[in-house]
Length: 155
Image (cartoon, rainbow, N blue to C red; front, side, top):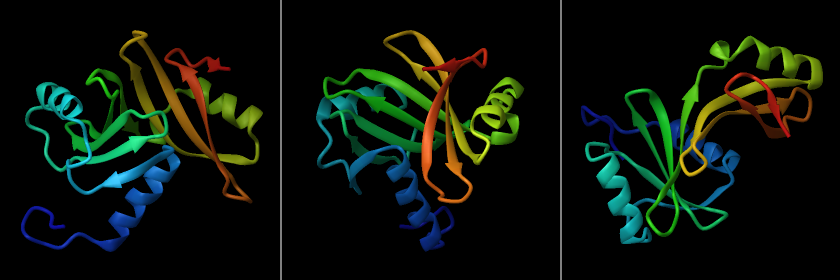
């Protein structure tokens, strides 16, 4: 519960992380590694041996999500129950989103705003995508939409 330098974490940071997990459809947040299978932990430690401060959660499909701050900012690694890394996600700045994606959203989702986006690598499929989370300006209801790396909408 402490950041570097021994200062207590802000409560707002914990609340925003809870909101983030809710957006990602994740549940069963654990504060430690007790509920995470050894194959999953070993796969993560083998790929990311120096990463600390990992928050684990079980996803709705039975995989496990490791959320942490890496060299590129907030990152998420999804590992199935057999210990295979299936995808990685890196949080991006919405201001840096491809103009074709921004234009598509403005044209087709007029009453929505971009909340955040992720660069997603689907390891098993060997494909990359952008996952954009948008919210209705009035109701604040969020939804995710997917795009190819060239900016084409994925149905």
